[in-house]
Length: 368
Ligand SMILES: *Cc1c(COP(=O)(O)O)cnc(C)c1O
View 1 (cartoon, rainbow, N blue to C red):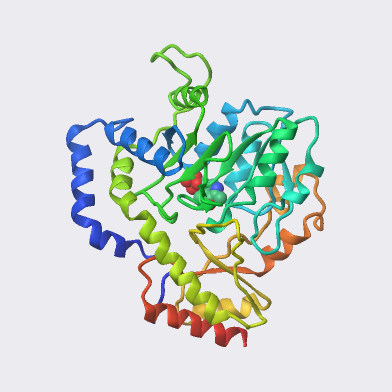
View 2 (view 1 turned 180 degrees about the vertical axis):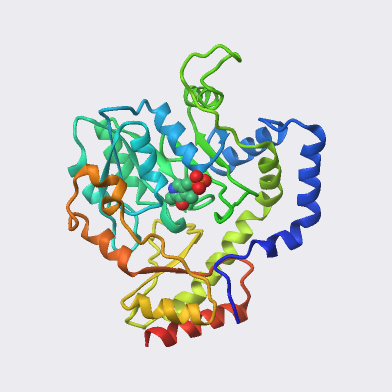
């Protein structure tokens, strides 16, 4: 039996009447850019994140770009982030002319190791971008403590962690800015690209709302050089239909994760994802295991058409585009080891018991 890594058609099946209606409504009222649905979604997501404000933007990548721009990041600045994440996290830093400074990760969560951050700080350091990888928050208490002591901004890359919690507090509410993505494979996915930035600060939100419309306020009077980066109204309408289901979907992912944990328990060749005590709500955007003989597992999964993905095969410091940073291959041993061992397997909410049993069976046989 084939099991896809993700099957969005199952979601559409039961949300079809509502989704179709919501999209047609936008087509009818015609306010395609920053229409009423965008405002409603911003209010609801600010509430979900326990902050005052939210600003919809064109993608999760743009959320990071605009947030770092709003922090004043530019040439000669340094921004500390993890060595192990989706490309956008580090790419936006370079796009602003600043230098991404990588820090190795914790071996069990794959998140930035807070114990290594302080050694990476220089007089040029302006911000830290912790990533809440796979749906579990980075260890935010020590990170916020370091940032406060050194007067450094914090921009959370919460693209994979919408609704996730650290000690009961939601992702995006810790830093100066929290950045989210509505890329279709995220826990809350749009029908295309989309993103959002949250902040608790009144001045910050004013700046973000100007930045996303070419730096203009009022229209055609450009205070600063900004971007064209808005969340499309149609996407906001889609997201408003899905939002009430988000908590339940994430809980379903947790259920699947517990079943995997139990099934793989005691198998030396498989390292299951760690859940830290501070991680009061891990939303499992991915269920990522580490295995010794990954190519054998990949062959087995391919043979029976079970979906998988390697998030991520190459750590930042080994990416060709970052060769100019001059890193040595062995500089970040934990992320390098992770890149060679990790593999993410299906965990979407609508996956059936039979499908999950098939995945478990295939994985177990392949590693034994
Ligand atoms: C998805 C993702 C992004 C980028 O989001 P897009 O909406 O695809 O631009 C950034 N960071 C992380 C960790 C992501 O997973």
